[in-house]
Image 1 (cartoon, rainbow, N blue to C red):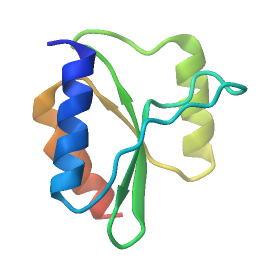
Image 2: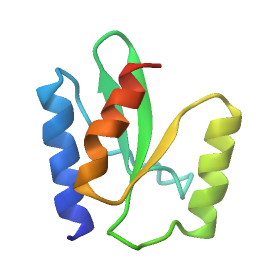
Image 3: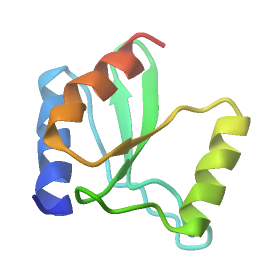
Length: 93
């Protein structure tokens, strides 16, 4: 399955939970995750979307580690089956 399809399904699933899932772009700070997941109650997380079997680039790993050190949650989504678990994890924080 292509990354774009997984990303679209994430957006739909987040919307079904009453949230929004905007594309996150940071032109001056490359390597940031693809999407913000913003859910009711102030719950949020960063999501990096990958095609199945695809790995994060070294710069992405560095940025994700930085975000985690700052106390933010970063999830890597590489299959449609993981969407529900990621949304549940964000909701439970």
